[in-house]
Amino acid sequence: MGIVNRKLSHLTNLNIVTTTYKNSKISEEYRTVRTNFLTSIELQENKAIIVTSPNQGEGKSTTVANFAISLAQLGKKVLLIDANLRRPTLHISFNTSNFVGLSNILLGKTDLEEVIVKTEVNGLNLLPCGPVPYSPADLLGLETLKDLINKVTEEYDVVLIDTPPALEFADTKIIASNCDGLILVAHWGKTKNKEIAFAQKKLSNSIKILGVVMNEKK
Image (cartoon, rainbow, N blue to C red; front, side, top):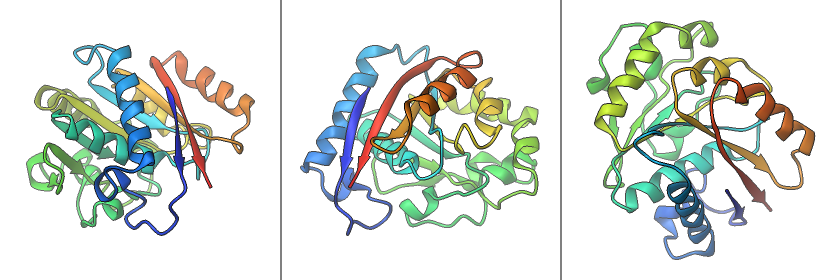
């Protein structure tokens, strides 16, 4: 699907370059990923998209945040969900609280409308992870997740879901049964080809693999 080359180590908020450096080469690379994504799928059939990686530290959370921003900048109504109930980071990216969020909704303790965060990017909303639960996989397996995804796909053009690494936890495979497609993010020069292939094989019987983003970090 594309290669994103992130070289600016001084960026804040997990390198959200698509807002802070809109005209940079890196932002243009994210727009290329966006174009490849939009030209290769039908949004009506692929509204709930998982973004994951084989392992930790491959840049998936930075990638999904910038991808969400680039889609919103094109005029799409986008919801970004932090479903990494183990190591959530998207609230840091957008400088907001993680006091309540997805985990509270799944437990039936709050409603979606009470925890949605309207970001500074027009058209982009964020659903933070919320408190990290004792058993993330069990929580993600509840029927409330399916109900939530069904609801938000009616309200948004695209729903992007950040999940834990596919080879380390079962969470992504559990979520996959409720989603339409998956984008795999790998670290160029670090992630082994066999790890990418294993992740694709592990997930392909549960969800359609839309593409792989090679994320080059220097």
